[in-house]
Image (tube, rainbow, N blue to C red):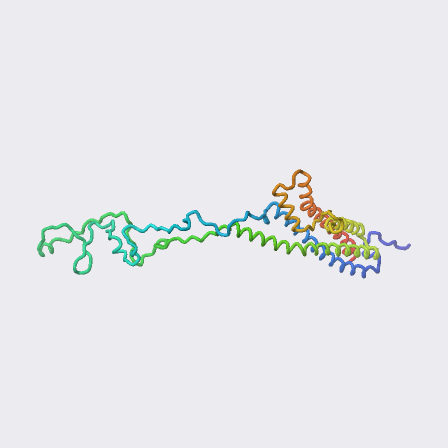
Amino acid sequence: MALEPKRDQPVRLPNPSAQPFVAALKTARFYAVVFFWVTMVCVLAHLATFVLAEWVGFYDLPPAGPAVQEPADVKPAGEPAKEAAPAGTSWLGVFESAAVAAPAKSPPGELFPTVPFEGGTKKPAAPTEPAKSSQETSKEPAKTPPAETSKEPPASPAGAATEGKVVGQPEVRPKEAEPLTPAERRLQVLRYRTVTAEVLRPARIVGVLASLLLAATIFLYLQIALLGRLSGIRQLTNAMFLLLIFLATILPWENIFEGFRASSLFDFVQLLDAHAAHGHGGAEGTWPIVLYFGRYLVMPIVSAALLAWSGIQFAAGYAESVLANE
């Protein structure tokens, strides 16, 4: 009795000659992934530009104003600036010493004012008392006057360590950034507009070319899979048709049909004009607002969703046609 083969054994290669097809599919998949991400970056760049323009106000020009504004405390032209001179000083007070410019005042902690004498030092002046003999002064112990309480704290001795504080050094605060003037802000916004236009102009061209190359690559992948009798044909077919719908949303149809402007890879200048008209109330009614958000917001979102779903279907078809047969 002949042994029947087991039916539960997996068949790795239904077609024994499928190895060359698998190698070709791996190469096609590499280029498909490159074209996919290039196209996705271009679509997301346009979507981010609309978000910055509509809700962030990144490209809104401020009202034109003078380059430099005069502060409020500036005197009008023709009037000389007057500065209040300190009391007790003249216009030559800069060259005079502080002792000559202002009378000396005794510190509040001294009991008697100091008077000069011949030795060149200062000696406190005390009230007159009858002179005593040298013997009496030698017998009597020296009496020190009681310490007078002063309002000022006693000075720390030389060499004593301070308790975590720097004495005599004022705190230096960092300078705060000054706000931009309207003229400077206007120049900054114009610079942002120039950079964005220089980025989106080639991104529009690269996005259209990359999407066409992606469609051609997926179509070639589908043909190789059909020729090699591999699985995953359903997912690859779905990816192909989703990509065709995606192409309908990004191609510049205004170059073919006059007056028809509906593309996810829009022109940046047209976006600025539409945004300015929408912001100043130029678009009256509900229908112009729907067209505005539908063209610059809904279309890029739909394009990104179609491209992402097509990529998911292509990945599923690749898993069944290549990974299952390795």
